[in-house]
Image 1 (cartoon, rainbow, N blue to C red):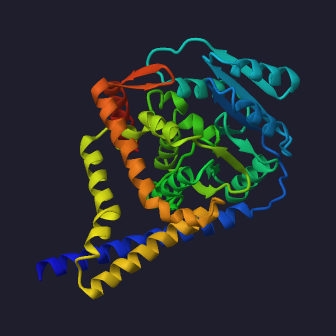
Image 2: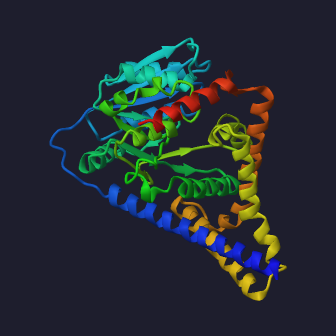
Image 3: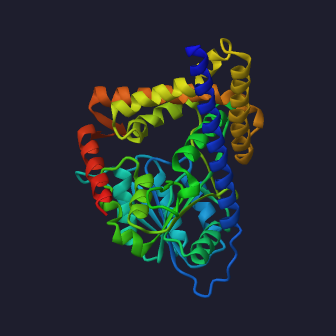
Length: 393
C-alpha cells in the first residue's frame, strides 16, 4: 500500500510539473508573438552600438560581420574587439573596419589580472562605443537584415531597459538537435518567461543578443562589476532586473541564429566553463541536479512497470506531456519533431557534461577556457560578492 501511494504522489507531481512547463512555454510563445509584432514609427532613431568580441573565431566571424553590414537600420556602429586571437580573427575584423566607416576595431594583447577575457573585451567595447543602446553579441551570431530595427522598435514601443533575444539554433545532426531541445526545455522551466519583467526576482540574459540602454548599463557598473563572472550574459540580466529595470525575453526566431556546437564532443568540452558556474559552484546543488535527473528521466520509466493500472495511466499521461513539450520546442526550432524521442537520452548526455565540468573544476581548482586559467576560489568569491550586492538593492 505504501508503494502504491508513493507511486501515485510521484506521478501526480510529474504531471503537474509538465503542466507548469507547458504553461511557461505557451507564455513564452505569446510574449514572443506580442513583442516581435511590434511595429512603431521611430520619430527619433536612437544610435545603437553593436559590440562584438571574438577570440580565435576565424571560422565564423566573417559571416557574422557580413550579416551586420546588411542591416536596414541606419544609425548604428559596430565595435569589434579582437581578444588575443592567434588566428586570422583580427585580420578579418581589421578588413571590415577599413571598409566600413561605422565599424571600429581594437585589439587586446594582454589580459589584466582579475578579469575574464570576454568580460574585459565587452567592457573595452562599451567604453569605445557611443550609442544610446548597447547590443552585446557574439562572433558566431548571424543577423537578419531587420534584426536591429525590430529590436529597437520593441524597446521603444515598450520602454524596455533590457531586451534579451534567444537565437534560433542551427544543428548539424539529430543528436545535437535533441540536446538543443533539452536545453530549451530547461531554460524555459528555469527562467520562467511569464514572470520576467513583472518581478525583479526573475531575469534573463543571452550572449547572442543582450540589448541594454547605455544609462542602465552604466548605472549597474557595466562589465567591470562582472569582471570574474563566467555567466556574464545571464548575470548582466540579473543585475539589470534586480536593480529594478524593465527586462523582456523573447525568441528571436526570424531575427538571429547561430550554430552553438558543431558536435556532441564540442558541446561536452564547452560545458567545462559553464557547467559548475550554473550550479553556483555548489557540490550540493550539483547533487540535487543528479537527483532531479533520476526523478524525471529514470524512475518514471521503471515504476511504470510495477504500478497499479491507474498509476500506469498517469505515467503514460506524463510521457505524453513531456514528449509534447519536446515536440513543440523542436518544431519552434525548425527541427524534425521526431527528435523528441531522443531528448530523454540527450538529457543524460547533458548531465554527463555537467558532472564532468564539476569534477574537472574541483580537481584542477580552476576553470580553463580558451587557454586561460581562472582560480575556482576567485570565481566563487566573486559570485558570492556579486550576489550579496544584488540582494542588498
